Length: 378
Ligand SMILES: Cc1cc2nc3c(=O)[nH]c(=O)nc-3n(C[C@H](O)[C@H](O)[C@H](O)COP(=O)(O)OP(=O)(O)OC[C@H]3O[C@@H](n4cnc5c(N)ncnc54)[C@H](O)[C@@H]3O)c2cc1C
Image (cartoon, rainbow, N blue to C red; front, side, top):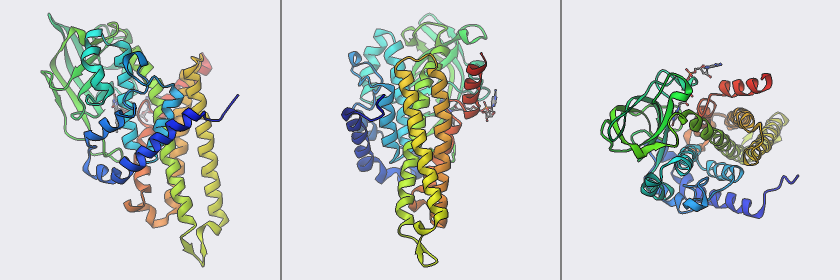
């Protein structure tokens, strides 16, 4: 058992970290305020191979292991969790495209998806179904040329911003086996978007409803096999959950690094804050939480990479544990900054805001516990 990162893994981490420090961190606050991320960032990130982390080499991707991909998200999140998490969604979709798209669709879209000239969004949630995603109602009806989709997708990261959408819709009966996956390209007839959601965190990412009104989709845009869409959607989430956990970890680490620097400078009662044992213990507790979270996450990623039978359970456990530990650490670090932690200039309040949603999406942490409990009791 070797817990150390290999030289190659360290290089992956350091490349992502350096990119973030140079290109993301200096702009993160401005993008947060503006509510958007310039698309030029994605083509720059893609030049490093980060737009196709889990796409097969034979399709032009980096074909990283799950574990190696988490290193990218952990490192980028030290600069901005919102940017890194958006990249994670694109990567989840790019992998689905690589594995499930028809040759014609792949030829048309995959090169642009890898280069992130085509940014991808994932559309499962609906206004009436989130945790119970299999209850979705968006309808897919056959037409002479392919399919017509009608329904509404809610909370879509990149809605109205992305270039193509992977949409789970009901082409058959009311069971999960009645759901299929489709790729809908921006500009398709019958595709429109709701207003920009005003959110607590992840503010640099536009979130909107994706509305489908008799939206025409060519037959070649069905992904994989009709009726297997829910299976694909869930399989995508195993990796997505690891990535979201990695995003929490990287951002919380950066909060701890900021707090460590701050307590050694800030004075109260004639001493620097690091001299108070009560505060030293907070720092130690944060370090313990983050180290445990990192080890647990990497173990879950390994379980996925090696197709362990409990890989889904491990992804769920890691997602719940890491996102909660990271939120606690970020909150502690804000507290260690006193009133200054509450000000945007110090960079901590944004981390607290951005990490909150990691406990809600890609399956809420209650749903993660449901997955774990089911697996224990089966
Ligand atoms: C900023 C943001 C971005 C998002 N991006 C996307 C995206 O790109 N694509 C996408 O498809 N979705 C996206 N989502 C949607 C997200 O995945 C859902 O919000 C999430 O799955 C929860 O669904 P819900 O909001 O409908 O809550 P509900 O399902 O209504 O849940 C409400 C509460 O009840 C709990 N609950 C529900 N059922 C159970 C149960 N059986 N046992 C115990 N507790 C339960 C939940 O955990 C939660 O606390 C995004 C959400 C947000 C906030």
